Image (cartoon, rainbow, N blue to C red; front, side):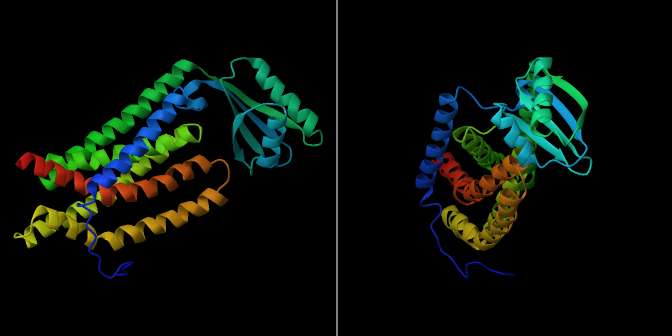
Length: 296
């Protein structure tokens, strides 16, 4: 198997308080940013707004559409269907028919040689938005519960599952904090990225936990301190290679994937970095911290 490092002997457990402090700082920045912005910047799926779908006679690039709308002071989300020459325009908090008419007037003036037809207009009310927020929260919550139960059953200890979920919550919350700092919208697509991140994070954590379980059986005379350091060092190359591979794919999506999946790829791009960090420096040290406190 390919190894990034031949053999390492880093003292991950010994430096745990430094990394706990770094995680605490990132969480604090996230909390302050959310408080400063008076909450998260939810997208139209959660806050409500107007959806307009237009079909043009010829394909119109999203960059031209975005430029025309921005020039006229209309902030929106765009989704392109190039084969059908259609585009979906979502206007946040737009509540009246005048917005749909305004958008049609903009395209008539800016693209007179590219006629279009109105395929549909929909309004997403705030009640539906609140329902979607609740559904997104419950999706994350029950996924965490399921992970705790599964990991606790597999490793015969609740603290392993708890540590894994703490690492996931750590990753998800700090990623949400990044979106708050950048004032980016939290949309359904971003929620999907956060759920994907949760799955990626726990998968990486379980690899280390599995190696810890094997080493506990193989090296019975070693202390938990030494066993955890040994396990993390033995899986370090695997963790870095896996994360680097995923990172390069997401990097190409971020720069070449277009505006539609930009926030999705941003969430996963940052999530892979913070997820790899928490797997190595947070999850396993939490198990150690719990065990030494329980034994005292």
